[in-house]
Image 1 (spheres, rainbow, N blue to C red):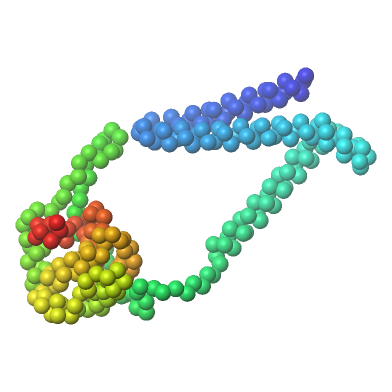
Image 2 (tube, rainbow, N blue to C red):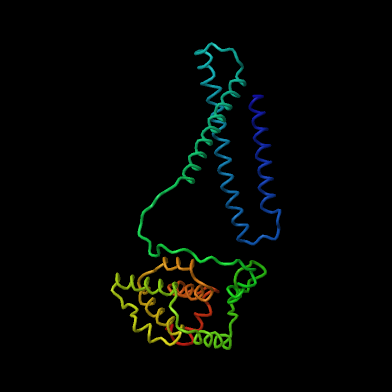
Amino acid sequence: MENFDKNIIVLSLILVSTFYLFYRTLFHAKKLTTFQQHNRWQLIYKQGLILAFILALSYGYDYVLKNYLYQFFMNLFQLQISQNTFVLYGFGLVAVLIFLLNLKLSSYIKLKDERVVNIEQEATFANFKPVKREVKPIRFYSHYFNGISLERSPKDYTIQNVKLNINLSDIQKFKTAQEQKELKINDFYRRLIDYINSKSKIFEYQKIEDYEIQNCKNMFELKILIYNRFNNLTKKQYFASVSQLFQIANSDETEFLAFLRDSQHFKFSSISIKHAVLFLKMGVIK
């Protein structure tokens, strides 16, 4: 009876301490959104299930040790130790086994992570090296991120409004700058055209012919030609591998490639927003 009362007291203290820690974790930061509180409740619920399972397993193991294994080992090895000492040895043995199992699993996972896997496969883009670039301060790349503004609710931080930070005059300047660029097929555009032509051959779509490239007066017309052919491909297929060309693209080419990538699902990022708005205004995107 005394042992039973002692166990009840210990269990009660553990549960009260655990509940206090959980309660403090959930309500210590009062400026939580409903979504954050829901996530914390889910975490507490899972922790509670794990704790209940461990307690039930411990009490079950304690019962088996005292009522079955203790007398069995005493008769088998003719030992003279108290029941509490035997229970302590039993839990210690389980702790050592769990520790060794954890070391074994950790070493196995680490070995899996660090193993060298040689894979031979056909790559869409092979045998080219990324262009070395000088790392500049973030302000030089700010135009990548200023295309979209999100207005969020101060209460629950949900998106209430989306604003495009681009006006028609900016688009006209961008169009003029694109039209003033002379036609020049560099390594990026050559590989992009070869990529589209290779996919067109597989899926039996119209390829980009050399005479069509020669008929382009500037880089803007070439971009329209590339987009039209790429758009034919992506009506029923999604080509994520085109993103590999980001490795050799400059700033303008990066924006155009992002536009091609985003046009496959018609959700344009801030990087591709200028090309998207311009192509919409010109009627290229229908």
